[in-house]
Length: 366
Image (cartoon, rainbow, N blue to C red; front, side, top):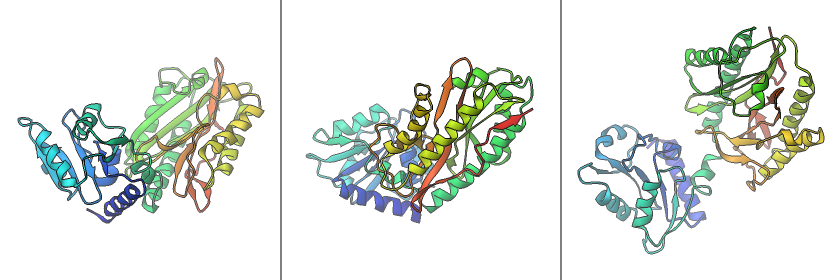
């Protein structure tokens, strides 16, 4: 196991001790990738990583073991289709060395329900919770290597976003602009994570599905896009228009820009995530558009495009150094346009540092 994974396993065991956790059980997920560099195919065959204070091992279908050995030196407990996983699961549980009378067990919230039930049935006296204060806690605090990967991914996304806006012309479709962005990612060694291009009234749908709407003069344009490179994704939203801005565009854009600035200023170590949401929301509410801000202010970003911390009105998460998350207030005017401005920030050296280098200025096409 490489130094990074060894350190992560040690940090997990420290968190387990701090939270009185006897066993952490992880399914095929980004949690498993984070802890063991394993990304097994997530089909119906049970795969489980189990970590106790004295042992870590993997329940794995025998047909996948040889391939998985290339990524980890953790011991495997293989099982075949002919015999099923029960015996191998029992051997793994014994190897963990936990007292099975009433253990405190953390279950991966993303694993299949049938995998989780295998564990629950094998440990009927266990108390159970999800990974928020163990693996999730660790993942929400990025190290220097993760910061570097996220920064590089964000800068690449800046260039892709610029390419998308540069393609704007009368008659081009949302889908064609998305293709320009996707092709840019591919040409630069990245894979598309998602790409949403919205023309005119379509921008008022926060999760619009890019389609065949054609761009015309006076349309607002919203592009929300991200790619994955170096193992980490990017995510950013910028807005603009073709030729001339629709009525009210400049005012709404200015409000959102101030809301982003307010949220960034509020995002510091020791501050609850809810205060960041409130800072953005207060600007928009004071301007008379409170009912038009339809969603939370942000979400965490790491191996997953959405992970902890979540920047919501009710979040009690206390921000700490290394946390990475989006700040993306929006104002949506049905039948007219919708605007959203999104930055990814990291709490670093006591402040929220923006990963993107691209200004939030409205981009004029045509």
